Length: 230
Image (cartoon, rainbow, N blue to C red; front, side, top):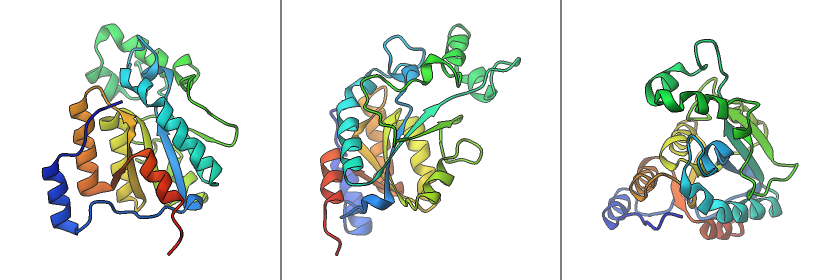
């Protein structure tokens, strides 16, 4: 996983602004969900068209967090990315026509097909029948029309999201930003997210902790899930 920490100058800035580094001292498991983003073959498999190599290094922390959440009666949600292929190429032409080279476009569209093998959750991750499965078709799972995530969260009485997955700085960050602006409490799981570089990963952690939520490790989250109500 990424071996980076939030820089001291960012910590000092946060402390000067709000007087504390971390926002949350306790989580209520009944109102909390782990939202695992894009931990699927398209992004995790070696040689996949959108491979993020470090996504395989965060499997153990994600499994541990999910298991801890289930044991405490919380919710585990898997969000995978899917786009429909069309005669024009895809239902997200703005992405595929502008950000994907010609030689990998067809492979990526095929991998992200709702029925394609790229939708399979990475085999080293532990998934149980009670977990919730959701598709999204944009970076953020919470922009209108992207997925059913917001409706699922509201219907389950969930107000706190623990975000894991890949890429830290793309789909995870996009979802975290929108979650905060929809009045959810947000935590980016520092050792449960992966980007293509340490620099990109750290940039997101520093952005989130300043403006959009908290940044905690799996151990810190589990401690807060066990903290007594005040």
